[in-house]
Image 1 (tube, rainbow, N blue to C red):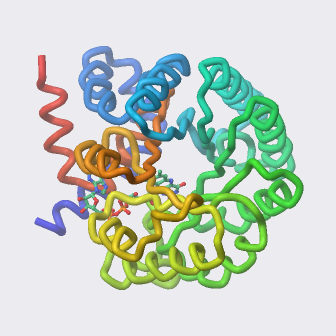
Image 2 (cartoon, rainbow, N blue to C red):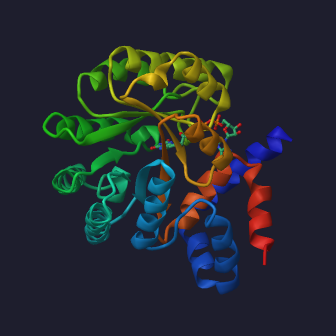
Length: 310
Ligand code: FAD
């Protein structure tokens, strides 16, 4: 069963990035409708206003919020400008609604794929606007081929702005060496396992060893008194960080993706644990849906049930 799930995950990762497949879905109304009904479990909608409304509801329930306009690997400057403008509008709308959210983005959504300087400029514009409006920005982490460039951009920005943080993948072997440099900057570290399939020379697969490495990195960050988001749905990690008392420190929080493990998130919230939910939106929901299904193939059954629901 596991190998079938692994195969399903690989297929999903491939079709997530296939532009012909995406075009076909978008141009085929019945297919669009049923896939969107499965995506709706994970994305707030196609519009920023829907995501902001979802974040307001989460705030009322007591959750902290992250917001992302979904997208990556934007191929030209015009599209990057449009994406940056969308993020600027998101920052302003969040602030108008009195939210104090983390605004999250992939640097390849705003230029990194073809022009690192453009990505830096666009990210700086977002961080400045966020600062003006009392919001924080978080840079997501992408495939290992982009890690060094993402850190270069982050390090330049975080050395002069204090409302910008970075996502760090514990599965990458290099993270052990990168961490001390990142701890020298003030930005929040969002610690994740890593969503991308990488070669064994580059990263650990899901395993007990990865869990141990995750916990060891978390411990180093907590010991340094550094802002940390423990971003995982893994019960064993959550249990361990609760037992070790990490979440008693004001600068440490848990973070989960909206629509994934809702009951676990609610139980933690009710237990007084600071927890942030990561809300996404945008017309690229297809990409996001494939990622969520690939990272946990049993979700395919749930997605099928969502599609069949009248
Ligand atoms: P896993 O070992 O994948 O899962 C542990 C258990 O959690 C599973 O057995 C299952 O019970 C449950 N679970 C996990 N995923 C799901 C799911 N989709 N549906 C239902 N149950 C599930 N990755 C990046 O590479 N770059 C990023 O910038 C990035 N940002 C993230 C931001 C946030 C807030 C979060 C929570 C994750 C982010 N990720 C990012 C994804 C991350 O790397 C993992 O792929 C993802 O969190 C799944 O790993 P896990 O730690 O939950 O543990």
